Image (tube, rainbow, N blue to C red; front, side):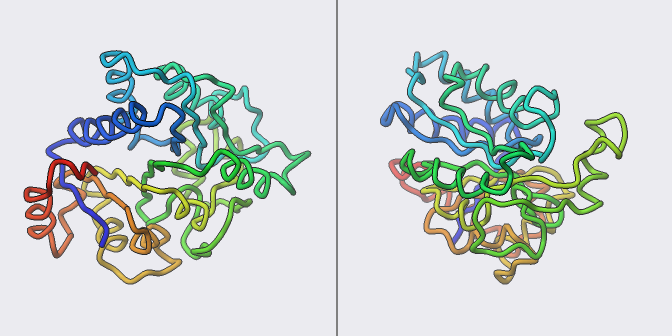
Length: 261
């Protein structure tokens, strides 16, 4: 069963993730981190950067693989996920930019970009821990509802609602790309550990569907139920529609400290 941790706040959730990743890096200096954009992971990245500095962790060999990228948006565009990952992860943590990878959204190579990206992840030994956010419709990465649960990295057409949601980062809706390249759900499930973060009442229905609902392509995040080591870290608001809330709290309160997350 997916582990559910109810944190007191987004800040507390970020610290839980950061402590786990700091421990991973300390024990495995060439750890491979799965990276996500969006608002949910930002506090987690800030806490991890603080741990790296305070513990003097050697991150020179740490590698990273981002979940997704817009198609046709240059890597130097400030809203490209290449630029976003560099701004929110690579620079704050002090990672080697050559070891941080983002799917290639260049139109000239887009036909093979998905297979190339999955091959690169495999060549790196696979992702040790993949951080995830969740959309209000249950999507993870750019795997919109209806996405195959065994899909590899590939091109996806963005829903109009997704483009509307992302319009705030651009001057107008016309500037928001219509396609993205995203790790598939099958790719995501190959990571050794999955950590999904969600905060706020608006995410409560999606969290309930993902954790306690049936496994369905129409709630892509429900695929986490198939993973042997998936951790969902939420605040009270995002956890408010979970039926087994008391059990999740009990399980965490009685979990041996050595298990971590």
